[in-house]
Length: 286
Image (spheres, helix red, strand yellow):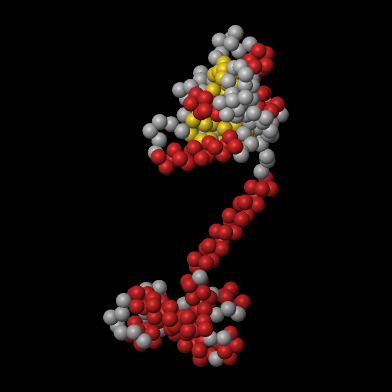
């Protein structure tokens, strides 16, 4: 396509047509071309050539190509495309019109490979810890690594969170409360690092395991460590369900802070031995 005037004529548009007019006109011609059967396209070279002229005109008017300058030597053909027997013009047009489809396909492939790699290389945690309520941290990677170092038998530590605090945005609070419910009801959490408000809320529902024997074994109150007693729904008397970790040195080293931090074990945890080992370690490294 040598000039813009010819391009308008090929598309059957006036020279004052807008880009929107050009887009609409090309869409109509493209639809018309696609409606022709494959056999007819292959047998009718004139039809294919005409559509190439239409595409060239569209590219020129939309600014995807510049008018050809007769003084400028033609672009050298791509040797790879030539060797493969692929028409360079058609190939360039295909790339232009389907670039987003191609990019989308590549992105989907990358995501699929990432998912497969995660499945293949992922190690199921043998201890899961949840941070809930007004518990603050920058990230949990340091915590995970330190816990693995502290309890050598662990292969992997999993963490999750549902952070809630006063003055929180309404939508965020709703989302965090939903997440909190999932953590207690469906997720396989073993240990909860929680604030007092969430501890009081869930201990009444029987969400935590009694720690009376552990507290007696480690003599935590004799060491000046506060034990949190409560009477759950089915309890006839109070039991110890939580251990104070507010000033715990290990948590501080991991960048985990809160106004009042309580450690508790989920009732019937999947990894009970590991959960108790973590609570013991936190108590002994306060």
